[in-house]
Structures are given as C-alpha cells and as structure tokens.
Length: 130
Image 1: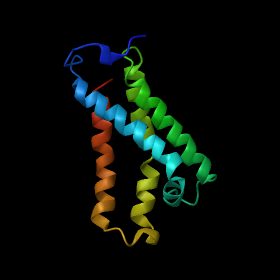
Image 2 (image 1 turned 45 degrees about the vertical axis):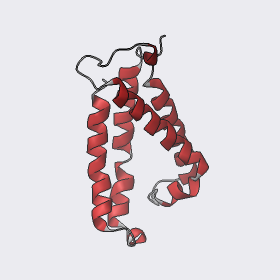
Image 3 (image 1 turned 90 degrees about the vertical axis):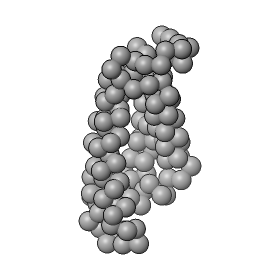
Image 4 (image 1 turned 45 degrees about the horizontal axis):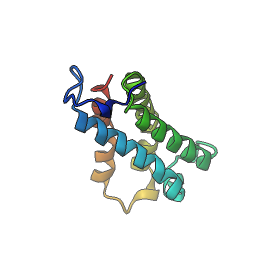
C-alpha cells in the first residue's frame, strides 16, 4: 500500500487535486482529534433521543481520524471517501436538531442553516475522491 503523498501527481483522474486531498485528510483528522480534546462541546449538540452521547462523540471522532488517514492511501481512498459521505449524512440529525432546538438560540439561525448546507458541500468534496 503506497501513500499517495509519495507521488508528485497533481491530479487523480477526474477527482480533486493532491492539495485538496491533503486538506480534506487534515480536516477530518483534526476534527476527529477535537472530539477527544473537547468532548463536552460535541456531547451538547447530540440530540437527546440518541443514547450514549459521549460514546457517539468518541466513535465519530475515531471514524473521522481513520477515514482522514485512509484518504492518504490510494488503494483505499475511494472507500474512505464513501465512508466520509456516509458519515456526513449520519451527522444530519445533529444539524437538524441544532436548527430546531431552543438550546442553540444564541447561534444565529443563518449560521445553523449554513452548517446544514455546508454538509452538502463536504459530501461533494468527498465525492471527488471516489
């Protein structure tokens, strides 16, 4: 299994550039680590109907780290990209909860809606590496 950063290629077929790939991998690795650094931040945004909020925070953090690292391996990049897209879809209930709940009144509603639409952009970005 060869790490893609060994290559000097600037494009991966119809997908995104190598810079975009590294940024995406870094974003997910750092986001995953943040779940362990500030778990209370993430447990607050989990809808109350989902049990074991802290466990969900840690599991999603591990998933983000693993998928971010897997993006760097050309042989499993497509699987990682699909995993990221599935994960982002699984996070939609959190975004919808934040929009509907009075608990997040201090956050401007346009920010909450923007986060929801950002998910679509992130899904499209991941799709570039399928």
